Image (tube, rainbow, N blue to C red; front, side):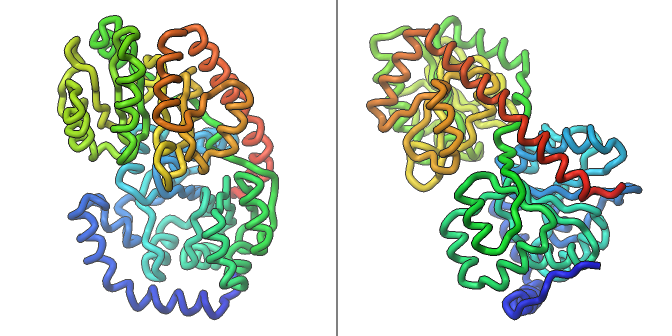
Length: 427
């Protein structure tokens, strides 16, 4: 049975988290009171699941938040196709990700909240689920869980890995520990060249690149939502601001107002990245003079409405498919880094991004080179691009078609990666 070498920092980390572990229940309850945890599922975070383990081989897949969790969907589909008898457990770390996965996971796939990275919780979780293979996505390096899973004989993979310079610099201050953790993985597939270089410098043995956010299916499109949206629009154009963050709603709203001042009548749809911000977003738009309705409040889009807040989960497919232009949020304020545009691209959206999309830099570079997206440097440029897309639907359609074509070409990397992932699974 293979074990991860216990460096002094790893031993100290295990000891420190073990001493702090008795505080975990009260900390989780406080987080639940603030809406950061699901109150009825705190036992899962402590490694005490209520669900039984299925018989037979089991693979555990983990993605911490919404984007990482959704990127697991094509991998889940590939695993189920390759190994029909394999049980799949998916863990995530946020309430929103759990809500999204409840709508998007295939039947039979188990979801749990990831346990806190403390020795007792890790041991209870692993002893209950006994995963044969563990696939972490992006940047999740939890020392206690990695060490304990390896000690129990699980095969480990770090898939679609992403590591920022700041994170690499932090791990670089403990090079022996970083090397020990990374070499516990039987397979490491980096998302991009920068991550590849950083992981290699820390001691990882790398396979080919794989970015799970580049593969997958289009999000579901609810025909009833599309019909209701078209009825509410009443022939007006629609501009969707998707996955927005504080500071962006006002910027996009002002650009929208400038763009539509002399053009065809239009409605601004705003889908905040965190739906709980819906009331604040609605209030801000009202303060800017918009007549606003909120979807989560059951308020319909009517002929009088010129701004509609989409503060619900799992419904964006219908709005992507119906909108004449899609402004991708997280890219007009510094520090967020943008969001993956490929779900919108798969539905032929005419996408506009801001200048601060470093998390999706390679994706946007390729899309911009293929005329599959537009970049707006500031609010003025955004207004001009929105106006151009609304006035020239043929150009918008061509951009959307190029975006869908680019998205469709990205599946080859997952096919190649599956040849390396499959041997990690129990026969």
